[in-house]
Image 1: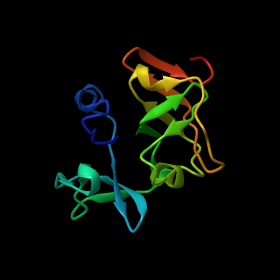
Image 2: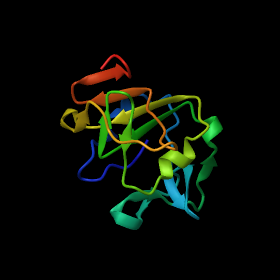
Image 3: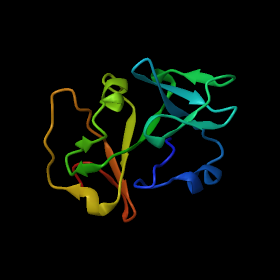
Image 4: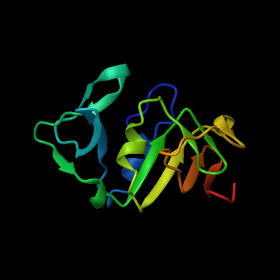
Amino acid sequence: MYQALDSEISLVQLLPKVPNILWVYPRVMNGKLHFFEPKAGFETAAFGILEPVPEGAREISVKEISGFLVPGLGFDQKGGRIGKGKGYYDQALANYAGETVGISFSSLVVDELPKDAWDVKMKWLATEKGVVKIGKV
């Protein structure tokens, strides 16, 4: 999960509808994403992003996470994603085999985006119009 910026789709209403899921949130530490089950709430970090307070929170390894909901500035129909340019999600998900869901407004989905060799593709795309498997957009 992620804490949405004003320009991103907020999924906060999803949480109570699936109470059996352990929701973890990213926090940038030492130039990498770490994921925490927030126990002490959130604090404002760089770029105004709310990140979990690490004190008292349990860190969860990427290998323990069954799926990622990933925001982006734009997505393409092949699973490509444009983020904020720091590569945090690409680095964290480089060897991840689980589910990845790009979250965006449909107006930000295009046919194809430029890509680099290290870019991680999403397996699913979710917009206000629904959720589709990549390749079936």
